[in-house]
Length: 159
Image (cartoon, rainbow, N blue to C red; front, side, top):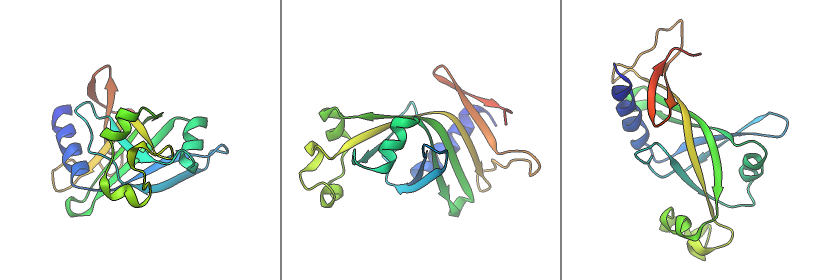
């Protein structure tokens, strides 16, 4: 399979799910995972999240912008793990663009609430497996791995 094929499988796996795990590192290097509701990946694979600037993940992103985002689709026996950088955006237009009405119970004032910001996640590495879609790693090695090279994604055997 080509990088294009693997990217298609990754997108199918991700878009089938409403939630993913967003994993940051504490100041001491301890991982913290939380379930979040992301927006679907954009064409360039940027993924957006809404959150409060007072959250623990925000403090951790400010200390270390390296983040892992993980999706799992049990029906396809599949997962996608993305490694990348997270950046906090406070721009009001972005907050309106990346807003869900069901979030009003957390932010009653809506996307203009000062307690609402968005996180821009830009992945540079992707690991995936999908038994149903025939992306199956050798059990003695690692999953299918893609890395971003400029604006393209390439298959790699980097561990």
